[in-house]
Image (cartoon, rainbow, N blue to C red; front, side):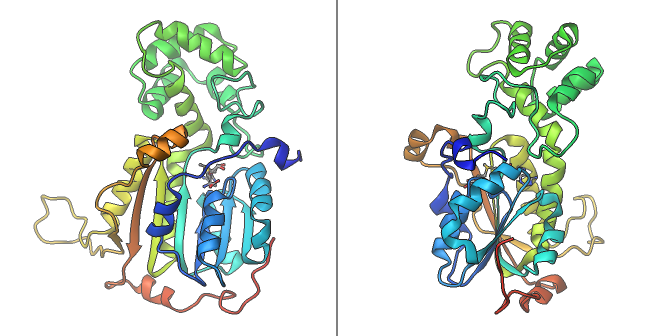
Length: 337
Ligand SMILES: C[S@@+](CC[C@H](N)C(=O)[O-])C[C@H]1O[C@@H](n2cnc3c(N)ncnc32)[C@H](O)[C@@H]1O
């Protein structure tokens, strides 16, 4: 594997103080960073939870894990870093004996080093093979989606995951141009399809987003990851999620709203039959966004939205069960792996 430092332009973590405050990070606390990336948030959490804080960090991208390992070297006795998709969060936490926890963070999307890599295919401004996988061990790449899907399915994908108004036009043009092998070839194809219709963002922005979401099954994994995160939180534990586009944010918002209600029966049902009990309390009623100063300093933060919720006990057996320490955490060895 290549040297992490050569690969890694700085990734500036977003909303760092808001995340620390949102998670109510405390000395000796146990935290899970589901998207450890370059380790920026993880470092801030470990500093604030010192002495005694511990962090389990996951990333689907092995290069990210390598970079985080370097960033977090000073905390090596307080961390476990795992190359794993957060869709397997519960299994990872089980294996590490790392539950219940005081906080779980998801900082979704991709990092600067992934976006600016000449090999990963995430950017429509850099020539690269059409890859877009977070995990290079996974089989399907963006090239497979672009060249193999029937036109109607491709249009549907671009429409659904990119919220792209010109999805049919773009899909049609892509099918005419096949085979498409590189990012710039795809970007040019989209530019021709969209013509001069759009001015505010690059015409390829939404199609690239759609392909990345489809290749990595991002929305399905987010739904599952959030459910599993809830299971790991001890009473009063906090869940913080930073999203970067409306599809992600809608999933996070709806999940937190549903889990903060005692009944989720449809409005037409007058007497509750669902038996659902609230397991979360919304910490901020409104979404938290970066300040103007942060956006100036780090333009990539401009679309970030942070939502935070706290685990509540209520009638919830799971939360009470979580109140006792899980195996291997208190006083247990928690070493690098
Ligand atoms: C915005 S970056 C995180 C940056 C990090 N918070 C920091 O401070 O450096 C998002 C990271 O999430 C990872 N990722 C995206 N989806 C994932 C998933 N389902 N499971 C695990 N990691 C994922 C990406 O590989 C990327 O490294």
